[in-house]
Each structure stands twice: as C-alpha cells, then as structure tokens.
Length: 126
Image 1 (cartoon, rainbow, N blue to C red):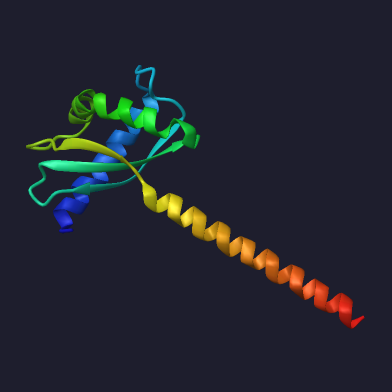
Image 2: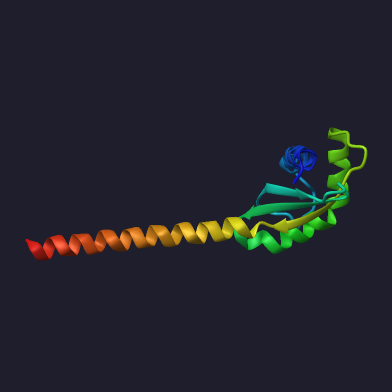
C-alpha cells in the first residue's frame, strides 16, 4: 500500500466506525460491529471493509444488512470526510481474527496440558 492509500484507509475506517456506532435502522444488523481493517484499491475506487460481529451467530445476516446499507453508509461517510472520489464499499467478515483466536486457544490449551503433565510428574516423584 502506498502512503496515500493507507491514509485513505485509516480515514475511512474511523468514519465508517463512527457511522456504525450511531446505528443503522436495518433490522438484519444485530450485535456489536467493529471495522478491523480497510483495504483500498490503488486507484481509490473500491474499499473492502473487514468487520467482526459479536455475537458470531449474527455474522451472515449482519453482513447482508451492511452490504445493502453500503450506499447509505457511503453517503454518511462522504458527509464526514472530503475526498474527490469516495470509494465504493464492500463489507467482508474478517477471517484473520477468527484464525488468531483459534491459534491462541490452541496455545492456551497446550500450556494447560503441559502444566498438567508437570504436576503429574511431581506427584510421581514424591
């Protein structure tokens, strides 16, 4: 990413998060929605917004709601920030965070298993 696309991505992330924090009246959108990262194309025409939805059971429905409200969200963001050309928004679920959570859970489980083995060793030695 160039410095310009990074600046645009950062500005869009903040502005979209503000719009989402105020709320959207679409009944499909449930839970807490957080914009985790934004990827902007080199020509600044498209922006992919990666989101997380808590609780996870509302992800698919909320994503559909966000996608259908993307034009409204785009207009709200355009009122907040001034770009010569506002990118088109595409919303996606951020899979990276889910994978990170799985890895961290696996590491925590491995640590608990190691602790149990150490305790069993100590008990056998005594």
